[in-house]
Image 1: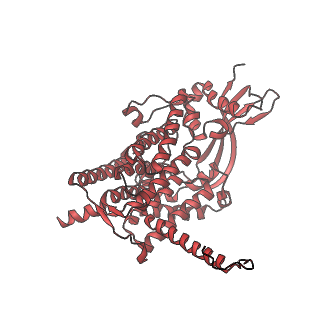
Image 2: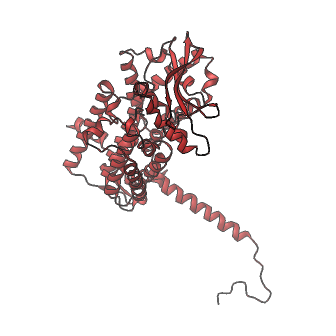
Image 3: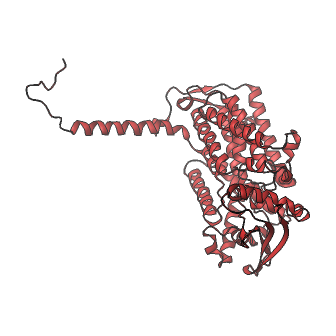
Length: 308
Length: 157
């Protein structure tokens, strides 16, 4: 019974709700950026019905094939829904609409032959954030809850599973070999096909590319450990993975921004509000002191401390 | 650090049913994700395998870069860059449809329409080719490159 309870409290910890309120704001605003920078092709792609091949999810829910009016409607719903949900207003309704619409929008973007895998954590986040419901006082909430803890835990699991499952897929695609992928010419292949970044300077050094493949593969395979890290160890892991994304961006122009932003689910965001207020108060105090030091010209015959 | 702890902290209650469905949903989600990576294909997105760059090219692999080239009326042959912002469609999407395009080259219409829509000041191509730069790896190092034509399509005038 004690074990069951501790397993339960690991999956559903009690955390500050202000953390979820702030994460909602960041992620819903990020979706607006995503629709313009990353999954930005559903509207142009919907002009080519001859290339559309629906994914399982679209067939399962019998979703109509994309057309220009449909994708523009989805776009408009996303813009309005994200702004409402980012304000923590109508969190279940607006959040639910954004989750369903963004999943459909992204599925359309993946239905023309190319399927990306950087959206797993973000899609999961959009589905679990509405379940926390109304957060009284939103970003200033002083309440804690298991509802908030579960939503954050789901996002954390999705983030680390993005790495772990990609390592698992590499093992599977190599016929269940652990050494085939890190010993292959995959980075060379990727750099030759995307010769825009700094990667081209690494082309003459295939041995170095193999070392980098072993490092990234080992990190991906062991990423699940992050779920049990705390404090500085967790911070070090987050810094490592952010560095990893910056590195892949620099050498391959592959950013994984939708996964990177979801790392915020690990951060004690509830400290941000009070921290910001303290900085503001200190700034005001300093500004007050500075203006007190300024000499104010006093007109002759006028009382200095006139209260009348 | 003392000041980060909220004053008057309260804990919202949670019913047994709410607790139970959350545990069940987590286990189901993890199960579906593992199943996706171990058994399914990209078709199962978002619960499919995370297969980007998840294959193992050999040291003598041939790397292909798929492109579309267009012939202008003045004889110039230009590259119709396969990116969303230049042609409304990306390279990976054209690569995924190579068998269909070689069987029916008029499918290259998606590229020419997207490209001319985004380049109204440029003359329209009169003929387009689906081509591939093939780069041979030799013992894990970049070797010779050659150009191969896969399909050609005359645009209706």
